[in-house]
Image (tube, rainbow, N blue to C red):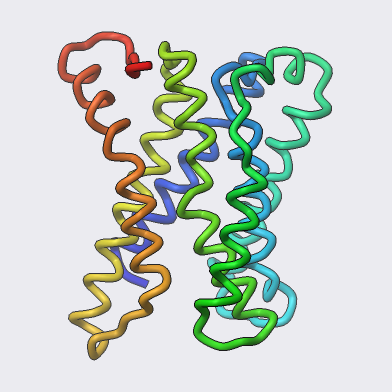
Length: 215
């Protein structure tokens, strides 16, 4: 654990709390991609299959439980909550996320650190997380106008990944050139996907105007 890892975890957690606040306070999931949320749920379940077999620390276990349960709660609300599900824009959220799942699975079979069930699940979760935000970004571009809470949610998700890259760089120089190429490459791809959003987010903050993305 180091400061960059902790900040990454906290910004990730804060992004989830922002999204939950939006859904529960407004009883609306307008502007939120259910497909992205379903992908994140798959990511967390696949990555944290060791929750009941490998104990690392109380902090680690709590964070795993929080991310699995919160992602499941968000998906449940968007699918089952009588008020929230009516605000879901199915016509705009049309990205074929199954393609991302299939591609991540194939990559996990081909490129992994060890060809075991757990390691393949871990690699699969890393590859899938790298592109899980794509349906959300496409939805925001189609709707163009981004409400404040949804914009903050995406911003903090991007910030979480940026802090994790700093965490990997820090560990590389302080832990005997510690490196794992799978999360490094996936993390760089994931951060790059946020570049366009960050640019327009910064412009909206600088000019004190509502965030709008180009079509």
